[in-house]
Length: 203
Image (cartoon, rainbow, N blue to C red; front, top):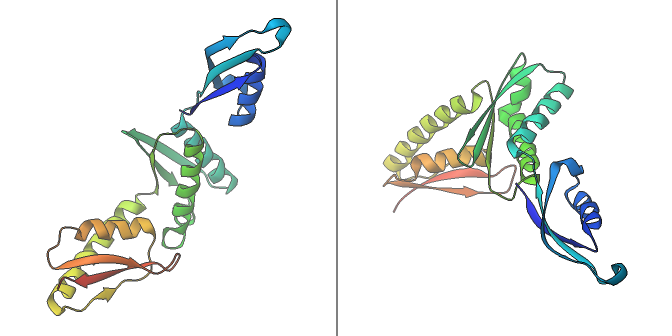
């Protein structure tokens, strides 16, 4: 949850400032008075209050995803799985290909936007993952098989291989898969959206 200290001439002014600061209705905020100084006839008064946004970031992410998918005209069921500093949204629908997008582009967009929504409601780092019909797990297996195959070839020939452009998520999978290999190492090159991975032999 997000917290901050707000000062004002009185509690009512603090509440108004807090609503403006958080861009949320007052019923989603709680107030803990740290110090309240009352001046003569209102002059010199000062209230110092810790304001907390009482919203579940993961639930807000779920609401966002439901709204976006509904606006796309797709009926879907979303399973939310919370872990230690992590939340995963597993989506199943009657139109998975549309939600996945070309090479997972729509999933990546949904995930990015959901992360932005979640970060709005918390100062903590929460890892957010959005998947559709198990696409990412299948893609992860495909990439790990590709990484192993290419790494063996690079280790044998001592010739580096540049893979096709991938998302940062996909590059991380290959980086992780080959991180402990003795004969090869990986390096990302280029600029988004054409950034790609190079598998190189260790000299």
